[in-house]
Length: 366
Image (cartoon, rainbow, N blue to C red; front, side, top):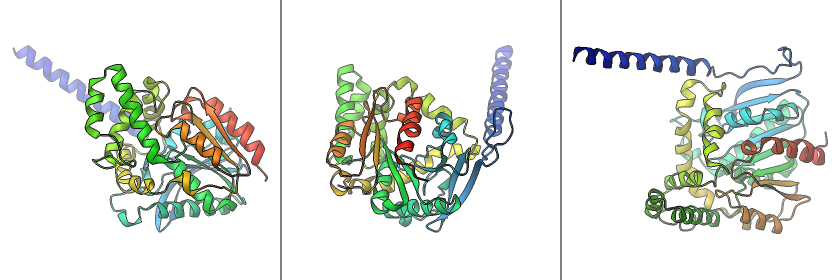
């Protein structure tokens, strides 16, 4: 008996030691800084930019990560999804190739990631304020890098924010790039729910059926239990291949980059989802009140939509319908056949090729 007790104590001590080692390792790979950009010999590339800045936007300092091999390259401002889900970790991990051709700017929006704190006034968490923040950051980047225009890329929620911004301020941008483009999101949410419930029934997944029927179908894009119910529904979108084309890849596409993201401290990583919950509660319902499909019928700049054919968070069929109606000097839907909602991470090589060898060549006028 005594030997058994000693063995249990030994196991607990060993596990405690392992936990301490893992904690130490996580802290060591999470300095909260960004590494310099180096050539193949390990020397810093002259004229490159690798910087984290807390830029004041709308009277709130917000986290901005800027990386590029040549300070004279065009600026590409990324608008992340969510609301409240920064994608800097994922673009840095999967899409570093873009840093050779752009100054890539990843911004944690108001209330998200390193731009979140519990003290943020909820009254400032409005769509109008985030559009204003985007406009203000655009002006800052144009001044900082002495450029007349930049590129704007919006993913998911960021595509809603992005298309509304370029509609108001077209003079600031060479082109707009949408991924997982929001159009008629009320209808898209209905299609998403129908997809997961149908798939659950066809596969006999009783857990999914029970949870989804408990949520009930959204009415005008809204679930009866409020915005957080949408996040419950998204669990089954992921499970059934509507977020990542190969569902088993989801954790490697999303989780691994966050773990190894140097630009967040360990505490930043622990609090990553706090900003998502905060932002979804305040921004998701107001987003539904503006139907991009009906409200934005014309853009003054080129628009490119890079859409996963399997996307069931922002329905492919609605994006196709929207572009057919939209007026723009150039508009193009570029389908990604082996992607769902995560085009830049699921097909990174093709994504890079489209941005660098197509969009940049067709629209850049330095």
